[in-house]
Image 1 (cartoon, rainbow, N blue to C red):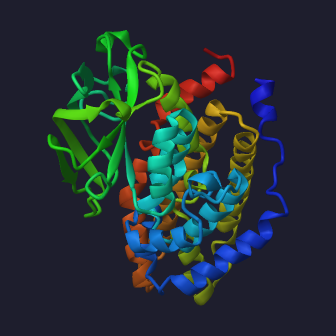
Image 2 (spheres, rainbow, N blue to C red):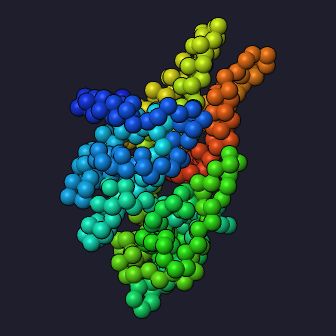
Image 3 (cartoon, rainbow, N blue to C red):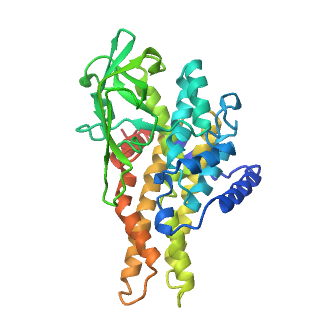
Length: 385
């Protein structure tokens, strides 16, 4: 237990990241058009390929990837600063998000040199967008029970099955899919592998799923006898479970697990400042600020482990779980604050923003691993299981 707790001692970003933060702020100020809070609140669900390409021209997509593959060769601290500023501004980053955050680093770590040379420059140029093929119908959060199967055949592999809740699959060029390449579902983690799937291949069908907010960023993806080349396999046959856990450490550890509702919070505070009694909710805002500062410190501590070459699975799970509670509390508290004075005139933009975030907030504790799965990991890390 002491090892886990010691991982979250006071952590700060290196002073050298300050000039980079100023550069990012200036870029966003000049590149983003004034946009209502309810649109900016979508941020890392907002798909805008043109904006991603603007970032890429600055070297800010694949920012931690080596320069030899088109990256900026910056460390995870710089990426933390970049992501923090993008989310705080409500920039639409969804197009390149997954490729930058996890697909690129996964290919760099486990892929062949040919895969690195082919995919990583495209990622860094915002010319190749990736989605994640993990969840499946009827499997819930039991990732080890995946039934989608890749079978060896002449010329490579035949892929059959389906994935669900796949973010932006209808817009993406590739999916990194966790599938079974040997054994049966009851074999659990054994026999799982990861493949890069070109979503333009014959036999791939993508069906968008419209959600409660009216958006359609989720999709269901069907594979019917899709022929994959031999070099579609990432890493070794059967090593998918270890690889996907390394990938999830990237997914769970960033500022996006703290800042998903930050545009709403900021706009609410702005509206309060314009009102007759700006101090009415000072205690509530103080609690939010305290929670945010603590979670940010924890996220930076996890980033430091990534910089040191570690794979902080349990620490990232803890930040994601606590961060999700914080993010979900923001719309609930703001709704309650608005309801305290039914006769008050409420800013229309605030109404739209809180409505959107309230509708999408339940997904915060699903994406990247459900609360139950994460707490199981944390309890093992604490030696309680």
